[in-house]
Length: 288
Image 1: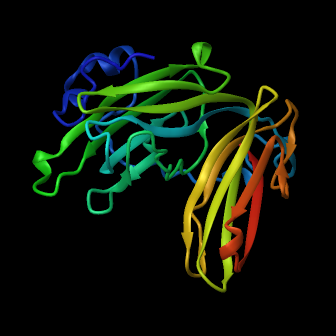
Image 2: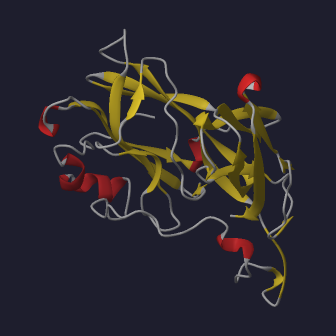
């Protein structure tokens, strides 16, 4: 998908160009508020309940736009790490608000180097693929001096349309003057919104931890890295929300899907030599 012309954020072009609203997105681009919709919202009865609200048994799955990975593919500094900050966010037809997939502040940037995977900090909830999804991005390279001297890595917006969206993970390269970022995305059909919560409840000593989910996309499991780092104390990891295949059937609302969710496998890897903790994984699949 090509980057929309005049969609850069740093110079305010995306807010001034009326054609973006006229031809692409009817929502308010200038509204920078984050979505207030939470995951697991449909764990309680709604007007979409079947057979009736008073006797909620199931909802129908829907299509979810899924990010699988974000990678720094090119940087002006190929021999060492750089500090990145900024965001990649999605707007869908549910509320049109920003749903951050990657979000790092200048005060707390992510340190990566060319070829590194950028750990996703979202999304906050599932991204509904209904008609269109707008992806906005504004990421910069932090210099040690003043913010106005920071280099723009990527900036702009792209649109994904339901009828021409990839149904298997496809890499989209976001090109910038000072580097490129690759995003791997796809639409998961007949999906449920799966929420994964991990709590490290007992730490004997520090250890390294890698947490991934594998989502069934057209009979092929695709990996999403949820966490990779060192654990030194009791803590709860960031809650993760991913799309999980619902097998084309209605699914019980609020049902716990245990270790293997509907089309979703969660894998936890601990460093053997440093292993010294117990953890608790909770997963729930809800209609979207």
